[in-house]
Image (tube, rainbow, N blue to C red; front, side):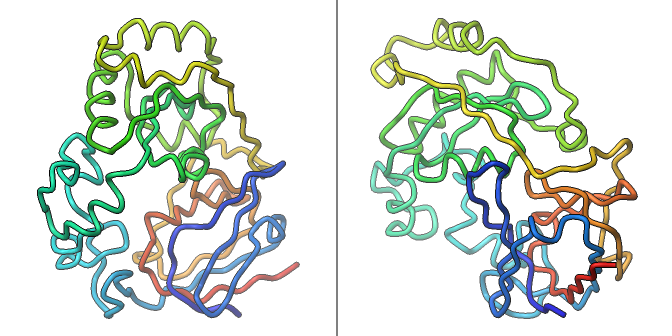
Length: 265
């Protein structure tokens, strides 16, 4: 029996991708649990920021922390609103400088479709894995989050920035000619951004530990169902895939306190 508060799985680039669930006092290598029966029991909610027993509003945060924590500023979702490079504070300038003023990558990834995105350079592979990307390439490297956000907004005129989880989980996507798509992107790039182009690009591919692709995705909501038990058949993105086509979104359940039991039978 394992107990703890859920937060997103730690991932490691490997063949296939390796996943670990950190429950503070317990650490589970999730790949080893595939083909085992796993049960989840709901045991309340705890804000990942203030550590208090509070109803989770979103992203593992209670409502108060979501609107007050520097980690949850508007620039997180909309990087073009970053202001730390100008010395302007949103919620905590020291924290915002640390996160925003560092190299960022604008990329294309193939998840449920071809999508444009932005992330910090030191978290690039984690970001692609979290999205369940089949393949991905880097387009630009920029010195801060603001410039990366501006570039992304420009690219969103020709590329989507959305991933559709059900399609991603079912491997429902069309193959991509990366040379063509990269050329299309860079031809659309304003001249001011040409100096940020990553000239030597490679296609990064990811193999996820999935034994069975769900035919019809059934989303689990542990807060409503209180208990679930099923045989784990795969992991992709931040989702656990079960034999009965149920899918457990770890990110959706961040801040949920659970009891987990793993049985071989």
